[in-house]
View 1: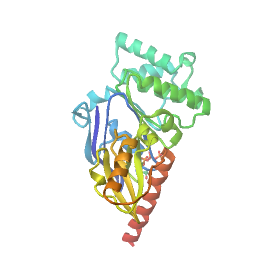
View 2: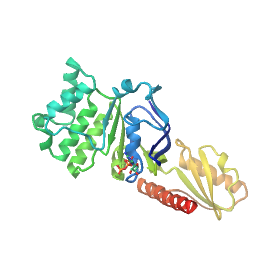
View 3: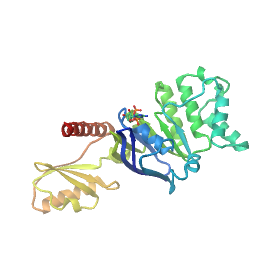
View 4: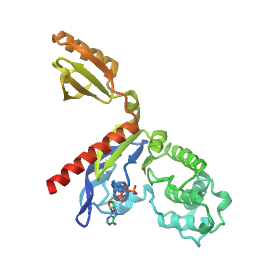
Length: 312
Ligand SMILES: Nc1ncnc2c1ncn2[C@@H]1O[C@H](COP(=O)(O)OP(=O)(O)OP(=O)(O)O)[C@@H](O)[C@H]1O
């Protein structure tokens, strides 16, 4: 549904997004995770057509966003990080204005506004000026404008930013509800948010895409750690994506997405033994989002130091 190819964007000489590619299918909830300044907002702005990439492109259902900008924007909803809400407008007036901006008219406009109000439970606040709303309600107004027109792709930048725990819970339920009809990309730097909501995680580090992984695969464990005297022919085993030789008889075996770790483990064990080698250890690697995130950041820190020493 959404194809992002080699997206890059600089601010002056600084490269904020560097050659990012991924594809997202219909109905997925994808978390875009990364430290402050990693490039999440810049990517989302480019996905929504509000910022032009310097290189690369975005396609939705095969259509190029740079060419069919308006047509694609009508099918997407965007909650920016700092949504400019007009404080003096009432919630009802603001949503009316937002619906106009989306090109909604007549009955469709009325139906859509009603639907967005019901989905975000804003009925009690319709006449309240936005400036008088709590942070949580302002965020709901932001989501309400984003879902007007039943977007097929919803892009939410930090949707629970500044919300208290109960508002956060309500927002997560709302996002789950919305995802029944739409593909959702949400950016956050909160790991639990991704764990609680998403099917898949993209981790951005220093503008680059460091990880693109399904959370069920991550939980199931998609790597095997092998310690053996030799690892003959392991890379050719069905279900093995790659084998990294970590030295001293240690190998890290990455599995293909749909591979069964038990079946691949059994095949690896036989390959070692039948090849005349000795098997010392074979186990699935236990990883969770936190470990993965830590790994990415450690790698980024090492790369950063190397780049600095090259520059010196
Ligand atoms: N308009 C701009 N001009 C110059 N630099 C910018 C601009 N917008 C973003 N940057 C820089 O680009 C980098 C990526 O910023 P971006 O806002 O995309 O990161 P982020 O991952 O969304 O961060 P956060 O989690 O803090 O919102 C940062 O170093 C930021 O300072």
